[in-house]
Image (cartoon, rainbow, N blue to C red; front, side):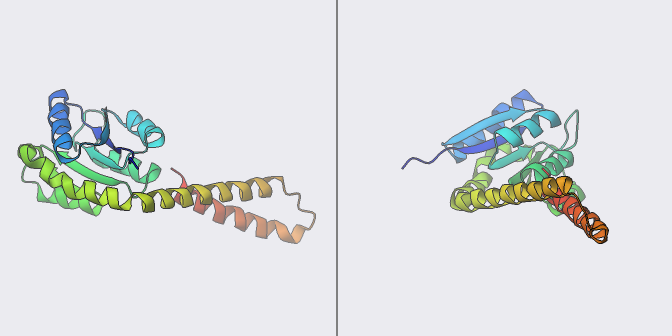
Length: 184
């Protein structure tokens, strides 16, 4: 059975860097579907429609920061493998902040010639965990759907008994909190 390609979203504004990164990706994994985007709106659209397994992002972009890309990814596709690839040299604090913010890796563009070797373990992990990732995404989608149905029910619910109004308000508040957790 032939597996579907690993979907990779590359967020890079420099066309030359994008081409070099693409070559490195192809050296690491031959069965890849790659999309290259340059701004946060395109990132959001591709996260929803393309649903990448791996996101590789430059840290410094003209219209946004890499941390904004990471935050958008966490909101729309939580748990997606996310790697920063940047030209910022010798900035240990930046590297630490990206990892603490949820990135899976942080690599320098000056080492781009060996980037493919760094990608291999990420691709292997993605291949091995793909069924788990799909199940997790399906559970999140199902939970969101259930929350939506409950909200619809509560929205149309005609409370005859005034003593339930406060309970209904509390339920709506709790559902609103849950929605924020699942809203991507």
